[in-house]
Image 1 (cartoon, rainbow, N blue to C red):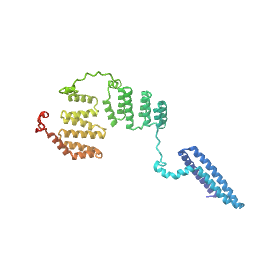
Image 2: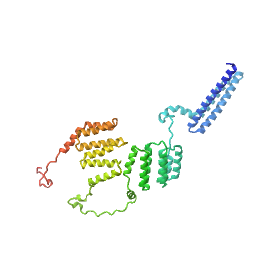
Image 3: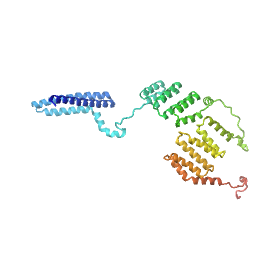
Length: 415
């Protein structure tokens, strides 16, 4: 390598290293400025520091010349004093930063130090404006946050809530919720929550059962074969009728019939009790309801208990519960409850130890690591005692007691 080439190579290397160093310094200063609580003050500190260092450089050159000339024997003393003054100036400029640097290890134990906080939307200002009745300003503040976080659930729901409840703009709130649901990447719980909330508003403010059902059907279509779809179908089956919604807001006057006089003197008040619904009529009502809403788990569960407890048809009750247990995407807690209910009915109506034991064993088989499995194992261990206590309670008969015991004449009579 010729000297000229070596010199050019050294110059390129020097310039490269200088650029890299300058880039690192610029990056460090930028991050420092970005994380500062007062960027303007930090820039002023940098400028004062550069002026001080420039003065230090000029003073050093001057002292160096004096030492070389040897004209002033006290130049070293002046130099030490000047360095002390410059150090004092730098300390005054950076005193807060120096104190923070010393205290940072201790403060970090409580505030997490320099750990980066995930950016998130804050709606405290909007909520405060809403409480003061400044709804338009609250909407503006929410929209400002949503520009930075366009997929935030809380912001969309809060915006729609103000539109519906305070601005009487149900169509606007509906549009806000639908725009949120149409955004890609949202989780199933968030979509279900938003649409259920919108259904609540249709029922509460517009008394519109059809619109509420439409929102719930959107959950079924958007989230098919999920527990949220099953919950939406369950809710559709129990939506209030239009006349019920109107009655809840505008209740008519009801004429009360004249009450029974001297009720305390009646021989019996049984005829005054409201008549209970006949089990046959109740069962027919459940069956008709399930023909329209076959996914209504509540009605099917009640029908199963009615079959077992009134009609003594454990086979029909078990068939209804097995339909519930066999439904896809049911929450595990519901399946566990239905299996426990089936075991209860088997114990209550004499299906025997083996049948109840196998039913409880299905909980262990389906959810082996769940707490419900441990509870099922404990019940299986005590199942014979449970059956024995049930049989004893059936076998106990009331003794024959003397009638009119309260009308006997003396307190010393033997019973």
